[in-house]
Length: 309
Image (cartoon, rainbow, N blue to C red; front, top):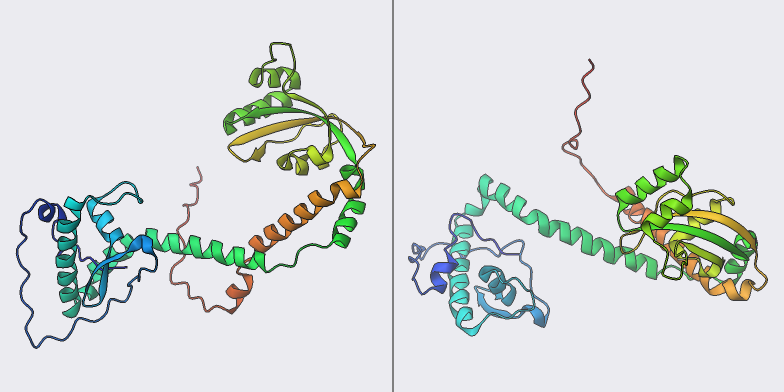
């Protein structure tokens, strides 16, 4: 990461237009060599090629893109823009290093402004490395065994070896899904509410009625809710991928004539794998938190207590 001192940064637009910015004040020959910047990010991929170095500090193609405010990360600057922009950045870097050399980076206002500007990058760092750590922990988990899958099947045989007849209310609007649930809870027939969101087809088929389905074909987001429902009961709002929201009604459940462990095994192993991953996500970092030295300097902001009338 590079330090661009707000008060000393030159206008890149002026340089790009051919206007020569005033030269910086010369540094006395006896002045010490500017120290290396403490938060430098060294480019490591060809996508962020180094175009120049200034006293060892790299100036990359990403710096040029940022300076020119290109809207697409994969869009290369035009040749006519590249030269003036790079020269402007080199000049800026020289001035920044001179500022660091005389201690201007220790100015409290600069440090406060820098901390605010760095917050989005810090958020990206925490998210990206946190996800990478989580995936590394999940990858190290032992896979579930066939014996564990068989045990799960035996404990849930009634559900896994069954077929269900389900009706659905489907919408991509969470507020509408909640409103539909309230309508059903208020006594409106499920068919009527579902018909308003999934009208019958030309041949009078009911798209909200899924008919009989073996448990293995029930959509994954439905399974947790359906496993708890008794015939005639209605679920709450189920949140699915791609902004889909469902309310389900279980009409009937019956034993499947064909379902057995061999058919259910693959789905069970996937379910157990996902279950372990979710458990890992819930507890990732617990051991690290226990071993870390944490000093909280300020309590987080909180909402004011309600005023009693």
